[in-house]
Image (cartoon, helix red, strand yellow):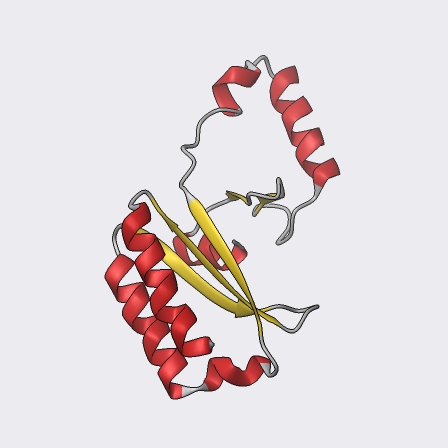
Length: 130
């Protein structure tokens, strides 16, 4: 999420897990910092309904693939499939493929309101990794 924030010069980001990133203060989610900022906004007289419901959820699919070697992401066919899927969904969503930092898995995450296209893009990547 922080890469997307940096690329688009956003100061506020969030993840499905509930992590909220306040880019002005930190590059990672910090619950205490977020709580203080919410309290500060409320103290200034803002209503919680004004600033806590201002985003629209985008459907997200996450696939975790168990792999013997996470360096599979360096494979030319895998790189090409990621590029193809990303180009297909461009303008309608996004794809993120990364190694797990803690498990022998590759994580394929896609977001789009077009679920049919999203599933197709995930399949394109998935079949080159398996």
